[in-house]
Image (cartoon, rainbow, N blue to C red; front, side, top):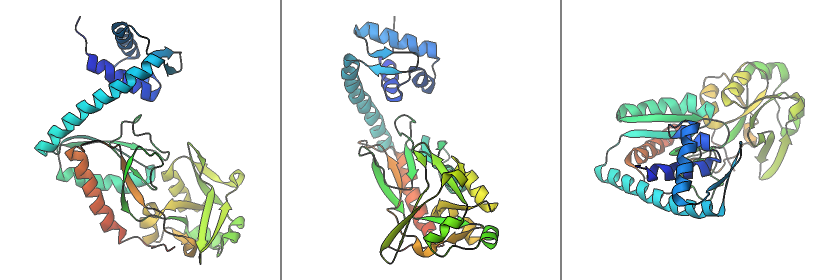
Length: 310
């Protein structure tokens, strides 16, 4: 019987990365039953058990770890070869998988990408919008936009522009509650807090005249959400003070719908970054998008309402 050993290897490697065979099968267009059957045939052909399988989890066996290391080398070599051919042709076509935070992705990045695809009509996009940090391998991401440098040492990052996070509130909220002039005055205010997979982002840090201070938002009284767009909406409705990346808040601040709170206590962070997996070749479509984003961020940075200072 003919076999697709390369496809089996991709299924196995993806299942190992995801820790779930059914999820790996779905990403490759297979039903759970088909994925299970493919893995079973691969193990039979190798005369080795690759996973210890339970109903909820996969765990690599010693043989599985050894085979995975060789599969990753082989699959990377094939991907590099295909990428090298695309580099040679210079064709800007195919699908680009992009990840970003929800608010930035919907209100800023998406219109930018409309301009990019107008220039390159043979490109298709797959966008993942989440306010938690994406796993580029598990989520099959070509390029992620992050508001801080990656902590994962295996990733490559390119700084796209300046970055700071600012506290914002609607003019109506500040009329009703007063405007805090120092971080100590925040105890008397209401807050909207973004909650990610790692927990609530309720630690606020400030610096002025070289001195650092911080304030922890009490979660019991906070409005909380895992969606940056909802946090923006609540702030516009006057429900409290919210911390946002300056890129997210810029349009609302320029229009007067939000005001920056404690602007003298904000400072510049490391930057906003494009992040991707290191490979020998970057395919032309991803390279073109990276160059486009470098140019667009540089242009838009000039219009940020606040230039924070150290």
